[in-house]
Image (cartoon, rainbow, N blue to C red; front, side, top):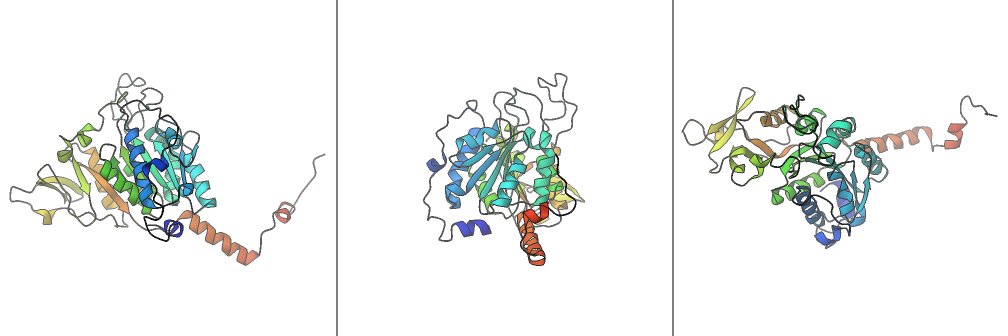
Length: 350
């Protein structure tokens, strides 16, 4: 629980007695039937009561895209802003109202294409904001163009001969921007999604959650290898701090490092045991290890990691700014805006 949450709810986690229904708005949800967005919305509404933060302290800010209709469906404060600019709006909200719980809702196109610059600077500044990035590898709202996370060679309405762009990996991008909390989960694992939302809320600093999310109309099944119950166990490794990286339907495989390269090994042939495997360390301040994990997605022979990649402490932008303002007041006295306007050369326009 971060400092703000403690200040808001000092008397324990059950005091407010909010329920999922308290966070449901009266707006008709206008997503396609079967869209993964429903699961993310439901699990967010189901998780927020457990955070014990008053409803009036929540603000959801979105950009443009299917996911960005999210604030309409939350019975909280919210802004549906312009394309890719949600991080800028959210930063202003948090800086001027540091006791609020601010959430940015964005998609792979909104965050990583037109909003890419805003996204990376939010992460490097470490403003205490939570970001849920819906990643369905497509522009769904505009009916199926390839996005910054679409696979190389992806055939879409805008790339009829296949995309020649190499995709962004959102986790790697976030780590490259020095993000202090980076996690991945899926729309089809409600318990895990709730767990990650709680972890993000508890983190002091910018928390990025990438949600692998299905668009059943324009990119159906893009993540099913990692979310379907029949294939998930063999293709996903769950990250748990302090535990070895074990996966497989029988928990009979693991991940070890061969130099700097991760490799999947059998735990049943007598050559390797759990003591040979990578032990997850989300607190490592050196991002090298987290980068290695993030790039496992690029190797089709490896499972993809799901869970918290990194969770480290670093001073937040709004706290540093507030300290700087107080120090300036102490040194120069109470600010006088009128005196500032009349300082230096001035002139009248007649």
